[in-house]
Image (cartoon, rainbow, N blue to C red; front, side, top):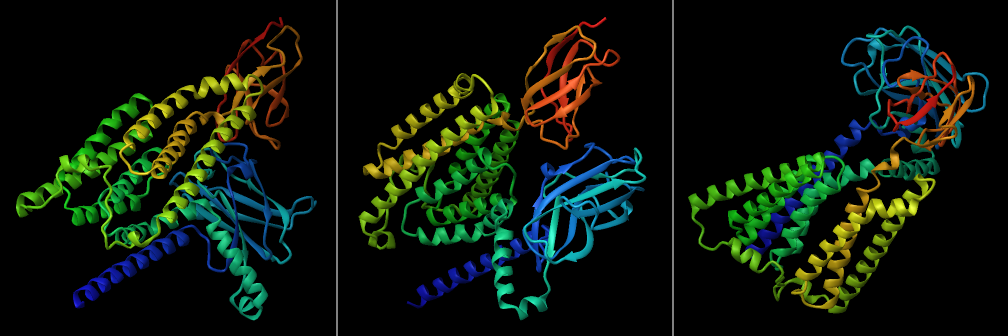
Length: 527
């Protein structure tokens, strides 16, 4: 009894330590994210800015921003800059006004030598108490910028932050204001997708250890599947790398190996699997995915080496061999004293049904979403383009799903099979179809109103996608020569031919962020 009590205390202490570490990691992230304790933020990205260049701001260049203020007491706008890690001798004029107003509410000049690389600089102004639910414009103008000493807008998110400030005294005196602030602060912080992601990874070691405790009495398949699933999730779904994910999986594998006495060859087999996947991804021109797969191969190889050294020194007698591992990979067992045995079977059946229905619905919605993306992006023939772009994804998905169905035959009961199949369908279709819509953010020229002309001065309309609406700052080039733009919308650009600058050649659109479109032939026969 005493031994069981001491064991419980030990588990509780480890959980508390992991919970504290998770809170500490989250606090550091929020602190680095410039959320501020008594602030409510509106965060903007590069789509909310209009800049004449993606490079240095030269004298006379203006950066214009617009945002909707959700909260009262607007008092600071932070803008992220990059000085190319050298001193900048420019002076920026900062201006702010409510949208639609003629006069600027506030103006001030700032020396750029105080701007730090990749850091947000605060432009403060007298607090606007009634700023809630209003639109505001701000402007940054270079007064002395020159090539080699100018400043750049840094397009790391968030590009700018509009902060509304509250005082401790005002919050403590007004319970209604305090309630408003607390609710909006929570939404403000955790409404951000990056914050939610980092929160999950901050507490992932705690979650893993809790899962480890709850699955006591269950054979190795569940925890092993979780560890490998995290690795594949990182390779094929996560857009960025997270050190805490690597640490958490290593931690989980250590717990698994301790409980089930895994042979080192098991980790080595997974290392070999990731090693085989790596060149296949390189052949498929998925270099980023291949790099992640190589990292996981290296991590599991290191785990295998450490386990092998332990086996050589300690010579443990009872270990789960590689052969036994794969022989029993689908044979999940639950101990008689496990708390899962006490749950009525109908509960598991209902969970399987609801989970399967939700996953199937999500899979259908994902397929429909991809179809709608093709429909919204391409003006004509989107059905044939959808079939042409996704046929390989569907074929690959069905082949893998067949293999999943074949290997899941050994699992007992119909509903576990349905749940496994539904989860596999959701993940597989989500991955393969997601790779077919990389075009969505591309700048694309579809056609020209006049592909050739012999007139001196004529307006040519470029039809396409993702040019961005006014106020535009992009440019139209024919073989590198800039053309005179007359009008600009997200889907059309009109330029006027000029005998001095227009020649026969390839038309290309270049946006503010220096993103280039495809090119189309244009024939100009004026003589």
